[in-house]
Image 1: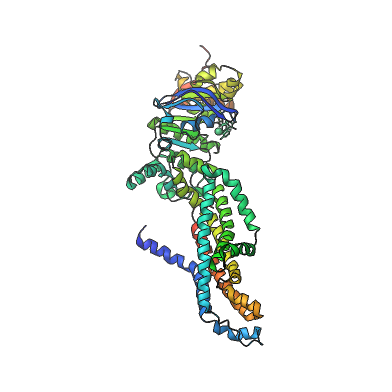
Image 2: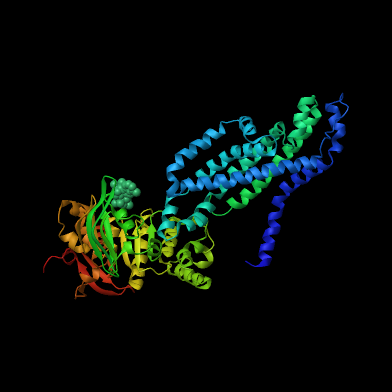
Length: 256
Length: 312
Ligand SMILES: Nc1ncnc2c1ncn2[C@@H]1O[C@H](COP(=O)(O)OP(=O)(O)OP(=O)(O)O)[C@@H](O)[C@H]1O
Ligand SMILES: [Mg+2]
C-alpha cells in the first residue's frame, strides 16, 4: 500500500476516534477546572462551607486512578490471555475444566471481599487494590479468551494443520486474530469494571478518584461524592468508547 | 506413489481402520467410497499424519511417513476438505499463498504463483484476489480450497469430499475441471466421496471400504462387472449398474459410420456418454440417433441394438 493510501485511511478513521477524544478532553477539563461547577455543586450542598474537594488535585487523583487500573489491567491481560491460551494447548488441556471453573467462581466473589483478604496479606496502600483489581479483572478476560479460541471453526484449525503450519504459526496467524474481537470484548469489560471498582481502593488507603467519594460519605458531603463519581464516570466512558473504536477496527475484517 | 501396508488405526477400543493395504501409483487418481464411518477420512488423515497410524506402514515414494518431519510432510501434500477450512480473516489471494509463504518463497514468486493458480481455476484475479471467504459462493470457495492445496505444487493431493456440499451442476463442472487439471498436472490423488457417479467419473482406481476394511479395489469397470459381493454391487448402484457403465462409455465407441439410410432426425454428440444417448432415445421414442461431432456435423449413427451392445 502506498503512503498516500494509508494516509487517506488514517484520515478517514479519525472521525471515529473523535468520540473517545471528546470524552478525554472533557475529563481533563473537569479535572483541572472543577471550580467551574462550583455554582451547581452549591445547589446540592447549600449548607456546607466547602463544596469543592481540595485535599488533593483531581489531576493527581486521576493519574493515580489510571495508573492503578492500568497496571492491574495489563497484568490481568497478560495472565488471563496467557493462562487461557495455555489451557487450550494440547499440553495444558487437562487444566481446562479447572480454569474455566475458577474463572466463573471468581465472578461471584465481590471485590470488597478480595480487598478484605488482600489487606492483611499485603498491607494498606496501592498494592492490595492492584491485586484485587487484577484478580477481579482476570475473569472476563479468561472467559472471553477461552470462548474466542474455542469458537474457531474446527475445520479452519484442521486446514491450518493440514497445510503444514506449526503450532506457533497457528496461534499467531489463525487463533489470535480470529479470537481477537472476543478477547478484546473481555478486556473492555474487565477494564471498564475496574475503573469503577478501583474507587473502593480509597478505603484501604490508595489515593485515587475514590477519595472524594469516601470522604464525601464520611463527612456527609454529597458534593464531594458527586465530583468523584462524575470523574470516574467520565473516565469509564472515555475508556469504554476507546475500546469500542478499537473493537470495530479489529472486527472489521473478514469474520462476520 | 503412496503405499499402505496393513495399516490399522485404533481410537481406544474402536478399530476405525483395520489392516488395509493400498497402493496408489504416481499420477493415479484413487477414489475411496464406502458407508459413513467406514474409515475413509481416517485413512486420508493418516497419510499426512494429521492422525498417527497405530499399526502397519505408510510409505511415500518408498519412504515411511513416520521418518518425515510432520510439518514438512504436510507442506508437500495438498489437502482439500468439504468445508474448505479457508481462513475467514484472510483474502482469497492470501489464503491461496499460504503454503508457499510457509516455505519462504520470495514474495514476488508467491504472487505470481497465486495469480497463475487463480487463472487455472477460473477465478479472475481482479475480481477475487481481495475478496474474503464469506463473500464467495460454495463453488468459488471450493475452487480457492483446491488452489490453496495446489499452491506449492505438491506431488500428492488428498481430497475429502471436496465437492460434497455443492449443487449438482457446480459439482459436475468442478469434476471436469479436476480431470482437466489432472490431465495436465499428473498428481497422485486420493479422493473421498459419497457420490458414486462422481467416483466412477473420476477414478482410475476405485476402492470400496466397509467397516475399516477394503472390500474390493480396481478399475471402475472391473468393479462394475465383477463385484466380489452384494455389498460392492449395491454400493456401485445395484440394478442401475448398467446405467453407471453406460455413463463411462462414449457414444463414439459404439457408433457405426454413416450408412446409406436416411439420417435419423434426433442427434447426439460423439463425445456424450452412452446413457445420454439412451435417455434421448427414451425421450424421443426412437431407436436410432445421428451422431455428430463438435461442429454438429454428422459423422455416424447409433442404433438401440448397438447402444445396448448386442451382437450382430
Ligand atoms: N478423532 C477421533 N477420535 C475417536 N474416534 C474417531 C476419530 N476420528 C474418527 N473416529 C471414528 O473412526 C471411525 C471412522 O471415521 P471416519 O471419519 O474415518 O469415517 P468416514 O468414512 O470418513 O465417514 P464419513 O463418510 O461419514 O465421513 C468412525 O467410527 C469415527 O467415529
Ligand atoms: Mg469422512
